[in-house]
Length: 172
Image (cartoon, rainbow, N blue to C red; front, side, top):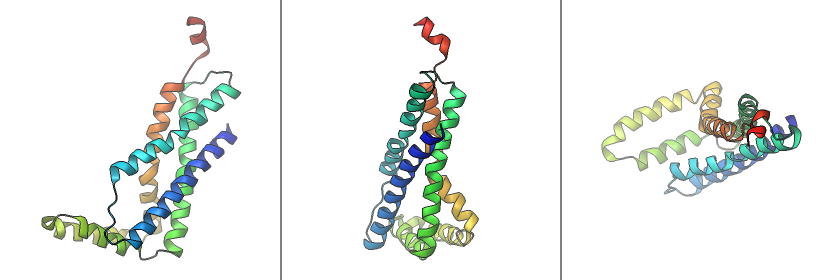
């Protein structure tokens, strides 16, 4: 089980990190960069679907085709946690060493993409966000909140789809 958790979690984390670095670099190099949250979260769902394959692999190869919902959810959650933790660690290094002005660039991006009537509200929100981002604990929590909830939802769905108890085989 540990091998699959580390393997699939590392693959997810590696792809998440690569995507994050590419997107941040695009934001830095193109002042008119337009991100798409729907596409971003859809890509994360597809990427986190590797959780399904990690749990299925473990169920079929190590557990004889049977796994409880709890064990499947635990394994899927741990895969998501490994991937998200890798993402957080890489972001911390990348942010503090390579893009320490990211919040300024991000604030400019948000303010240029919001509606004119929202500019005053957004300016205040971004000032608060910038102040909170000075705290490394906040940086860690906000970074986890970007990806971990998606991974946990996929882990839950995977556990529901993959759970199979031994007595179910005799019924089919």
